[in-house]
Each structure stands twice: as structure tokens, then as C-alpha cells.
Picture 1: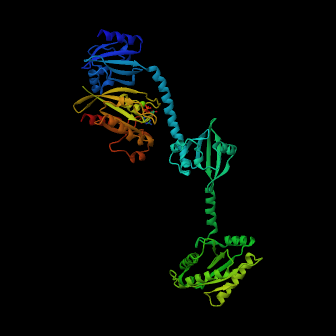
Picture 2: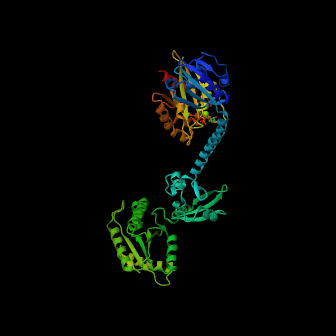
Length: 392
Length: 158
Ligand SMILES: Nc1nc2c(ncn2[C@@H]2O[C@H](COP(=O)(O)OP(=O)(O)OP(=O)(O)O)[C@@H](O)[C@H]2O)c(=O)[nH]1
Ligand SMILES: [Mg+2]
């Protein structure tokens, strides 16, 4: 017992530990004087230690093992008590007594706390910024020394990367897996630091802008502009198409025909006209008339290729432009279409026929002259009894 | 006198310290002062004829880099596992905290708290998805805080 006291005094002389001795019944049997500073009240022998140190509630099993074996010891770290941070050690003292050492760690813990507060605050801010970046429609990437530090969701999705970690794991040259058509992020920075520049990645065109964040941190913003083109294209399509049949309008057709003639492409022009359309309108009404127009357009269109330009010329007339001068082949095809219509049963109108006028371009043809020839052929077809193909 | 150790576990900044403060002192502070280590508070409480002293452990919040040391979890009869109902990731991590607690205390009881409910709109509150037995709490307004601790105490003492 005396030996232990000496050891304790030695420890205490370094002013590091305070101690309490307790018995099996959790009664305090001995304690160092300064212990009270951790409790804010005076300590008395025979008091229940758990009134002062509720921290050991739940540690009964462990205290049992400490009593049994001097090798057993437990430490409970960083416990806040009465404005101090302490470590609580449970040590074997004797078969009936446990030594509780209280180690003052306030100073070091306070500096740790400062760091923790700083890192938690930043983590919260970081999470918020991340969410902002991820909510953006543009591809965003932050680099440091040519390596990716952060890439937003859109960026990862675009380059089919599962996660940022996957990207970071490939430490070496993680630039290359992005398939960007530049040497490095630093090179890209030089390219786009002054103003937004165009950059093509695969089939997409982006406007890329580089911003210096800190000495080594750079932000790259990629905004896709093909999307805008797509939108324009969609809008254009809408303007150029006839709402009833979905076919091109005459104006668009003329434009394309003029272009073809200007570049000396030989083309074949076909005008199709539904026979006796006025009678259908008169007999079944305009709603059926409209349906017939739509059905005819679908029927004829089903036999054409993407390359062939198919338009509606107001009323019940259609125009087809084949970028091909092999007239016999085209006439063959038109003949097939004529037959198809002839055998088709139209919804609400039953049987009807179509007449066709065909003309192939010659040197010095204009839109007008070619149309005129095809129109004349059509006129002949009508005059000869309708439901036929005439070449002009 | 029965003494029971209970823990508050969860990610950092979900309001563990604030829930205890509301429960014990009935006060609230808007400022965020993170907890390091642990701080123990006590509360007397009677459930039916049983008198009990709850030893409430305010444990520092887990961060992606740091797990709660096992020594804090030892010997706990119960735990309140806390998430911030406005931050998805803290709710995703609930399962991890529950597993950790149950691994050390297989017979321990737990209740899940979705805190900061005052930041939700009434509609959001009404349609809020929770694990069974979860409680929407607000340490700020005091909503369901007593109920939260009371439910856990009852479970432990039954
Ligand atoms: N609006 C609102 N804010 C809350 C509520 N509870 C806590 N807070 C705030 O959230 C922040 C964090 O609260 P704490 O109680 O310190 O959170 P904690 O879980 O103990 O955090 P750590 O100790 O770092 O793990 C503080 O700014 C609180 O004021 C609540 O119910 N409503
Ligand atoms: Mg806290």
C-alpha cells in the first residue's frame, strides 16, 4: 500500500494526474486534493463515485475485470467536465480497489476542438457548394496542377464516370480519360482563359471558359451549344412543315430545289394531284377531306427514302424531289405508288386515285421552268383520264 | 436508484447537443459549437413507479473521416440516433450509426430522431418518410423532444 502511494505521489508531482480510489461497492476510499476542480464540489470518503463520475455507469463489467487482473486497464478519452477536458483511466490497484486516474488534456483538446470546428464548418460549406455545382446544367470541373479536384455530376455523367473517387483513383493522368481534345488542363486554361472558346468533344460542341480560382486551382465550365443548334433545328422544322400532313411547305421545297439546280445536280421532280378531290370534300365534308390528304401523304411517304424531299403544294397537290436523274427508275417507283393508292381503301372516302406529272432537270433549268414542265405533264395525265403517270 | 446510460449518436451538426439542451434546460442556441469527445448530463425521470436517472452522453458527431470510438458506446442501455431532416446524407448514414451501436450493445434500445423539423413546410412534415418509430423533432421549437427521450426511457425500463 505504501509503495503505491509513493508511485502515485511521483505521478502527481508532475501535476498530470488526479486520482480516486474506489472499492467494489463504488465507495470512494481515497482521493487527491485537486480532484474537486473536475467536479465543482467537494468530495467525501464513502460517497458513491457515480455521483461524481456518472461516466462510469455502464462500465461495471469492465471495473469487474480490472479488479480481477492487474493487466486490465481502460481509458475513456476526452470527457468534458466542469470546463476541463480529461481522460479517465481505470486501473487495477488491488483485489478490492480500482484506481481512477484523471488526466487533464484541456489544452491539447481545445486546439483539436478549434481544428474540428473549422473542418466541420468547411465540410458544411463544401457540401452546399457541391450541391450547387451538381445542380448546374453545365459540365464543371475544378483542377489543381492538372489533376481533377472536383467534377460535378454532369461532368461525370458526360464522360460516363461512376464517381469522383473513380476519377481520382486514376491518379496518373486522369486528364486523358475525359477524352478532351487538348493536351492538358493547363493547355486548356491557356486556350480559354481570356474568353469563352468553342471546343468539340466527339459530336458535341461546347463553349469552354477557364477561371483561375487560386494559384493552382482552376475552374472549367463547359456549356453545350449543340443543344441550342438542336433547338433551332427543331424550330426550323416546325416553321418549314405543313401542320396537317407534316410534309415540307412549298417555300422550303423551292429553296431546296433552287439549291440543287444551282449546284448542277440532276434531279427529277414529280407533282402528284389527288383526282376529283373537290368531289370528296363536297360529298364527305372537309374533315374527311383532311383525313384523305393526311392518309395520301402517309401512303406516298411510306415509299420514299429519307433523301427524297416530299412537300405539300397547298390544296391536294404534292411535290416530290428525287436527287437522281434515272428517270425510268423513278417512273417505275411512281407507277407502284399510283397502283398502291388505287387499291387502297381510304378511311371514310373509300376508293380514290392520284395523277402524276414527272420532269427531269436539264441544263439551265430554273425552279420555274422545271415546275412548269412537270405541271404540263400532270395536266396531260388529267386530260388523258386521270390515275396515270405522264413524263414531261 | 436505477441509472441508465443513453447515447446521442449521429452525423455532426444534426442537433444532438441542442436536443439535450432543450430536454434538460429547455433552452436553445442558434450558434453551432461542435462537440469534441463527450459530455455527460443527468436527468431524473419516473416511468410509472420506477424512478430512474438517465445518464445522457452527448457524443461528438461522426464525420466522413472519423468514426465514434467504441469506448463511448460501451454499457449503454439505449441510444437516440439523430439525423437532420433537411440533409439527405445524414439520413442515409442513420443505418451505419444503428449498426455501430447494436454491434457494441446487442440488447440496447434505440429511437431515431429526424431533427430540425421546424425548417420543413407543414406539407413536407406531413409527408415525411421515416423509419418505423421515427420521431420528427425540433430542438429549436421544442417539438417532440420530451416525447423522444420519454419513449426511449420507457423502452429501456420495460
Ligand atoms: N432550425 C433548427 N436548428 C437546429 C435545431 N437543432 C439544432 N440546430 C442548429 O444546428 C446546429 C448544430 O447543432 P448541435 O446541437 O451543435 O449539433 P450536434 O449534432 O451536437 O453537432 P456536433 O456536436 O458537431 O456533432 C446549431 O447551429 C443549432 O443551433 C433545430 O431543431 N432546428
Ligand atoms: Mg454536439
